[in-house]
Image (cartoon, rainbow, N blue to C red; front, side):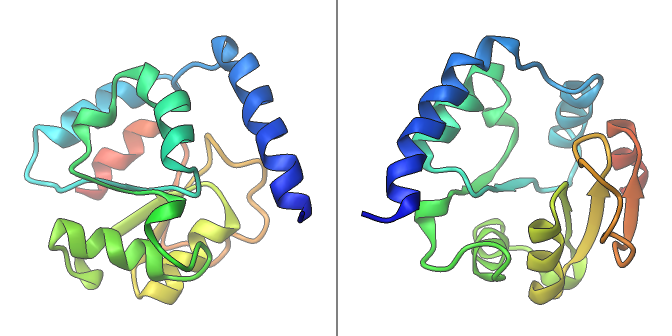
Length: 149
């Protein structure tokens, strides 16, 4: 058994135990709803499993605002490899040069760059700004997403 196989179930259980303490970043719900009412196509590329997405994201009631979702189990390769993002773009029928991937981890940025997609660093979710110097856009608050349109 690998460390991942041993630790992942413990991690997942612990995340659920603290889920009642998690809330949506201020104004993010309104931004997501605004995007869903615009011509912009939206998708999710996550390293979470489908079950983790159901357990950890579905309770916020935002899934219906996204047109396409790629979870860890949907591709053979994972972030920072470009495969998950390229699969999402394919599902959205979107072109790499017209897309912006918003993320808060260095793996998100590496995934975007290797997929030929512009990257926007979501600083409200990031633990550091270090390493994000090559981001195409810096987003200080969720409303900044609307300025990308």
